[in-house]
Image 1 (cartoon, rainbow, N blue to C red):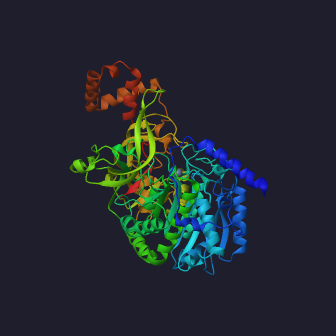
Image 2 (image 1 turned 45 degrees about the vertical axis):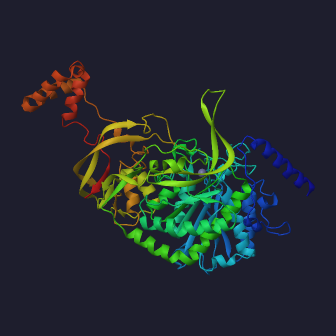
Image 3 (image 1 turned 180 degrees about the vertical axis):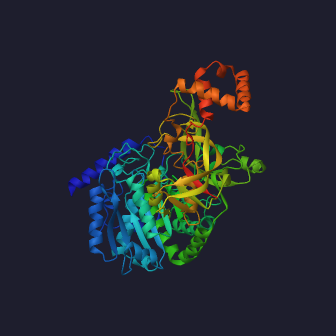
Length: 619
Ligand SMILES: [Zn+2]
């Protein structure tokens, strides 16, 4: 015992040393501290035992949860898949139903909540909060939370990253002492993987979504970046996104309720915050709907209510874990009373079939706003200068200092609380609309893509006979290999592609094994954002179709010469076109290879599938 106490004291001191470089922290006390188990409780969690200095490692976590599940008739534990390094990704099922199979829970009238922690495993607040809550559901006073709701809980999604533990993994975060790593064992950021689904971890979660069909999905993170007073920020997407009914419910029913509960327990809830200028709030806050590579945007596109939670990294671990506990409890509570309304709204959102949908969202107004002056009356004076959308920020004063190292400015957070109105930009403007086709046809040869679409749960018809279909296809025009800035640096294990395209009509023969994907299904919008090459998260832009950029048949010069002579003799128009090209393009005129290629591309020998995106749109 004494050794244990000494160890936790040492760890604590080490943490204080490692984190003395962080901005000042405000002392905190809250009602939610009464949730902490006392030392005599046999189900005290390892984190509570350490007074929130450490978080248990993978084995200790799984063993503790296994014991809990074995001891409680209403908690069970299943593996939902294995990580890249072969660790089981476990999920706890808390339910008072008699049958707790996926099929039974999917059919149950009770709303189903799915919560995942540790997608970025250094941001592990959700795991320790969930362990406390499950303990209180099993052996404390919280069993009533399951009267009208079923609860799925993934304590650690990025299990491999969780074991790459160090007190130096997240320099901007105040505890726990041992933090996991952001990416998985393949160095992939799991919260960029929801569309392309390369990782076993995200494939496992999406399988859970398909098999259990949760009503509400929550993904728990910890921020980086700016300082402010809020200890927990969370929400849906407001006016952005593909599920307007659900977004309204999250904004108007869920968020006010959870905020009230958190406030009553001594927490400071806020909305999701990102500085426009990546430094402080002087240029305002911005909230953009990410691409479906992000958990919450993916959920929105699937028409599944999704909440992104970002605890504030500069708040102490205890405060963050307790806030998360209160949020989880509030979420179960509101699903018990308002779950049926969310269910109705979700059904309505899933039944919509917009005739066209946007591929992207942008911020409509980005004019400069007032500056972030501490508490000044500047706001009163300049109220009319504020953009339409503004936000009262419970902030922390920041000052700009000159660095003697770089000679540039840097921000210093003073720890002094201030309240100020700031500009609040939101990406509510849909752009780049694409018309919904009746269906997509994917060639049997794109079996890799077909497999991934299946994993998303997208319904499809597998062709048992060859079928010739009139379809619209895209021919790529200007091609940019690399990211949006045109740099060919790999991103998340891929080299991305950007290309303009032109639609063409084709009569395409689809072999056995090809698929037809109707867009008249709840995941029709998702199919569009995965298959339309203008979508930033399409398989095309992730570089899954690089082979269309290669020409693979050749023609020799001794065949070209007679071919060209024949072509010119047969077509006076072509002769004219050639003369014009030579006269207006000297580089072309002086390049024999370019001339051969020009004629080759106009000959019958040329590859008709060159630059042709092999996914067909049935109009
Ligand atoms: Zn995160």
